[in-house]
Length: 110
Image (cartoon, rainbow, N blue to C red):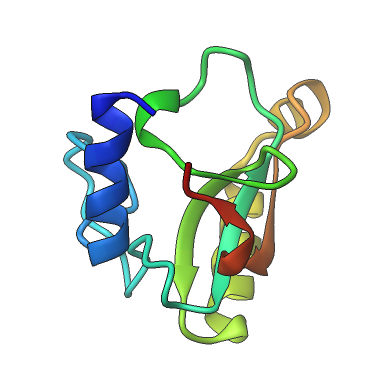
């Protein structure tokens, strides 16, 4: 684990890592911070090779990117459904991008 990953992990564990990632300027919407204490998470499957900042992001056991965590499954499903609707048909078919709900306990932290 490099220095950027360890700093991001500490922020992640404390719940201060925003939904947009470090330095993105985006504010988390409606409790969408990445806090592992929350049981439900939204993950992104697919995408291009260069997408994301791998050193500061977290992934589940399948290698899918953690987008946000939520207290209720209903909130997480709403977020995943909303994010899936925002993607173009090309993003969905060519890049295979899809958002889905999973357990935050499946996130790899090392």
